[in-house]
Length: 217
Image (tube, rainbow, N blue to C red; front, side, top):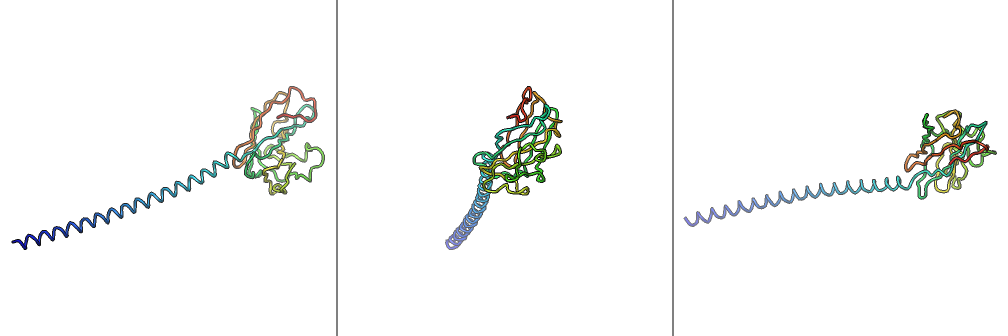
């Protein structure tokens, strides 16, 4: 009788040990799976955070600064706008071929894109910047007149890229866009690069045009 009881106790101890081992192995597997999920999640979050940080830095620092805007007076009507721009401080390179000008006189709004057929490089400028040949012949494009490009980033019509230190003029044919600009007319718009902050266009034409070249903004 005593031997039988001892045998039953030994069998019970063995069963308990096997059960404990199974529970332990299951806990290890669950912990491993949970750790793997946590590692994958943290890696994904880290990569997204880095990408977001880079994009935010580019978005904040990159952009266009409108230095000034001039117009030419022809018989009491401004026919062309010369919008001088440069990159913002710390900005990445800006591809003008991917830049859009939004401009409106409150009655008509135009979206203008780059016209490489009339890009004027720094050493091509001949006389006044308000020559008709320096401006587009339609209301859907703008042209580029390169004033300063020390590193040659904007050295050909097919490579209209500006960076730190570059100054260019964006030419707009307001005769085509708005039938010319007249006194007291309000003009507003944006120079919108591919990435970063846009440059602001906002001015009111003078009450009378007494000079051939008029500083508007």
